[in-house]
Amino acid sequence: MRRPHAASIRWIKLAGVGERDGGARPAFVLHEHHKPRHHFDLRLEEHGLLRSWALPRGLPTDPGRNRLAVAVPDHDFEHLTYTDADKDIADIGWWEEHDRTDRRILFTLHGRAGSRRYALIHTPENWLVHLTKDQPAT
Image 1 (cartoon, rainbow, N blue to C red):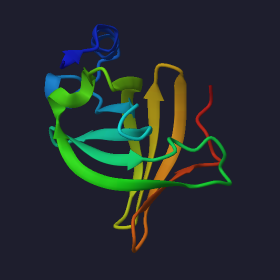
Image 2 (image 1 turned 120 degrees about the horizontal axis):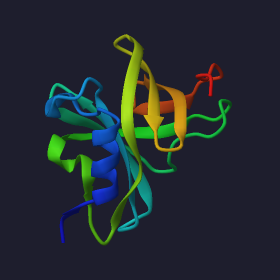
Image 3 (image 1 turned 60 degrees about the horizontal axis):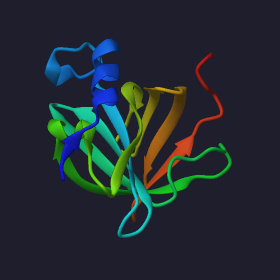
């Protein structure tokens, strides 16, 4: 059954998130999938769509350990607050791009629990997500 997560919708409206919905900041969501195999999906709003990467082990918590990020098809913006029996929202908020090249996107996620800076690094085979040593002030 498809249902929007009411608390997340309320939070993103308060934070002024969602370029498509008239907010000043692009949205992000980290979905946690419980089936068929536990993993996370990172979705970043760009040009009215959600660019998406599957993260088999979630976002990194240590700058010394990168994690695999597999690019998956873009999703419609309406998928931002989508949950069901097998999918929850682990975090949601807005994201800020700091730098971008063909091989890397440097950005900060501003979520419910605070702000963390990451880099998505494009390798010949896939993507890696890296927690940067330089973090936003809390």
